[in-house]
Image (tube, rainbow, N blue to C red):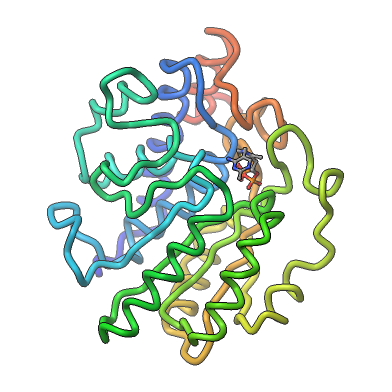
Amino acid sequence: MEQISVSDLKGISAQIRKRVIEMVYSAKSGHPGGSLSITDILTVLYFREMNIDPLKPDDPDRDRLVLSKGHASPGLYATLAIRGFFPEEYLSGFRKISSKLEGHVHRGVPGVEASTGSLGQGIGIAVGMALAGKLDRKSYHVYAIIGDGELQEGSVWESFMAGYKYTLDNMTVILDRNRVQLDGFTKDIMPQNNIREMVSSFGWEVFEIDGHNYDEIIEAIEKAKNFRGKPTFILANTIKGKGVSYMENNPKYHGSPPASDEEYERALRELSGDVP
Ligand SMILES: Cc1ncc(C[n+]2csc(CCOP(=O)(O)OP(=O)(O)O)c2C)c(N)n1
């Protein structure tokens, strides 16, 4: 695997974040907040850690990533395009008639492993992929990215039970712990007392990181993919809307694009580093 530097990874993530803003502003809809919170994690996975080849998106030996919080499609689509799975020009069709880039991630798009959007489902699909990998004696690794609001779906906990039962040490769940869900904060809507202990008590090995710190992301992913005997879980503390000041920690930008040309331009300036 090519060892791209942290500074190059940061440059790529800035590009991805700008594409996210352009996509939702052009579509006049979509989910920027939860896309920006996972951008650094997606960048490390797709540009450094995952065994993938954009020219062979169906290679049976490839690593797989299921975006269980499928509304964060702008983040994944922009990552896949910049990684070379499909032309970047396609991003301008996001959420428009006759484009393949639907509002929630869709299996027909090169690099997308599962159609998701109904929360609580993708993690179970990832369990199935990991179990298939074991049965087929394949060495690929399966990643699932889930949201903290998504933890409120009971099916997530069924997946944790199954992962433990089948000793899916070829699987890593990454929790985007941005503390915001659709229209409010998780602590007010359905508080989660101690996620580390909850998941660990289901038999998973838990790592906790700052989900915007590249050294921590890289170290945790490498530990997780090499860990044997239990499935792994990375609790990534993130900021919803990361990188755009007025979107950060603001539930309004869960599912709304910049509200005006001024907001749009400010977001792009901030992501270009032109605003202190
Ligand atoms: C089963 C289901 N119920 C409700 C929704 C509507 N919905 C879309 S995103 C969302 C909030 C999700 O919160 P979280 O998982 O924390 O995502 P993030 O904040 O990371 O974007 C909800 C309730 C859905 N997509 N699926």
